[in-house]
Length: 467
Length: 169
Ligand SMILES: [Zn+2]
Image (cartoon, rainbow over all chains, first blue to last red):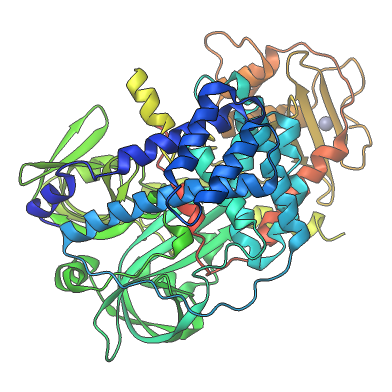
């Protein structure tokens, strides 16, 4: 990304975004207080949200749902309809933002084509269990949530975790429940993550529709070729970790395209930092490529419509060393970006790989910004995972950064790798450097001192669980 | 300040649960602040098959220690002081959550100069009071069960709401 492109990205506010988010904020406020206690203002906010959808296919049903909810007779169907309305608004916001970003970067994006989907697994009892908990939350409102209501989801979540096809629902509900538990009684909190919890609630409700959550998870085919890694993004909550590798796939007969490969593993809150990689030990080829900066030769790897490879480590082989910065310099500008599945269209998912260089950095009160040709880009230095070597100091000392452009109320750069000068020596650091174990002697020592948390817990599980 | 708060409330990707600090899990594999107690599971030093369920109650500072089969801890006759399992629990809880968070949860006034689990225990003067072990033990088993759930390579887009964040600064 060069200065002109950043200038275009930051230029004027993206039209329509503020208006859509105002409507969403009204809905989110209703969830804070509960649909059982709407009051006049929040009732008007729901009507406004439904009104904004009037010209869409959801329009009539959204209007009816808002009316019923305001009248105090909310059903699962009404709540789901309004959740769909909120999602549609965010879908529009997502599209406007991503179009702005693609235009600024000159990035070409594939059009969405959905492969015919197979029938979704029937787990209707479980999904209806999710829905009734979510309905109860909405009627009660976040402010009324306490330990009993949170614990009511425990059994459902446990059952969801046992069904591989329902992992998305399980991980999402578990993450939300943990936050509500840690915040209970929520009524005593002085500020609430209103947008965030409404996001999670909405997504969970839509994923819990019968057959929900399968859009985009059907392989459109399989691919072979050379995968050149750009970097790895790490996602984590108390009981789950996911790595998402961004790369460029070169395969015969097609232009280079951006793809991702993910591995997610359940965990517990005491497994943190570099120990996270040990949870992913079944993927040594992928981890090795991250740690050693190698390309990967893949054969018949399933590829989803969303541009996600469904990773099979045994269909990948370690290739030649490949510097991610070199990959980005040579291939990123011309790579085709994948389409976004309809249900996933939410700004939180925007994570476009970019290479930024030729900037100067500034640090103020812990915040780091890049000045690129007179345009200022904020760096999200909170988002530097403890399982890798990147620090705010390294970013501040950097001269080149491979990262993801994100949007959460404003555009930011999430670093995945930096080239920096520390004590007059060039240093390169990537999020995935420690995928096969930490390489920094200080971190190695700390790890050795703490012992192998994963091994200890597996030993305890072996002795105590199977009795 | 209000603008900051409004911006925070309108963000999608936030840290809501404070992360825990890494610690050795060998002696005390499980610690939690839940159900109005600091509670956890302490591995027996002598019998590899046995674990103790130990807890301190918030407010009253009543303490309890028994085996997972609900047999009272031999080192904790009524009227005595907390056994070594309870001391270990307090020490590891302070490592995992930090002294302030544990003291706040238990409503212990630790004052200045306190830094360890031992300081925390010395500033409580509750009595022995049997708390149910089965519930805590089953929560521990549920905790362990996460490591039995298989990994997956089908992407979970919802995890974009849960970024891995750096250490709290
Ligand atoms: Zn004891």
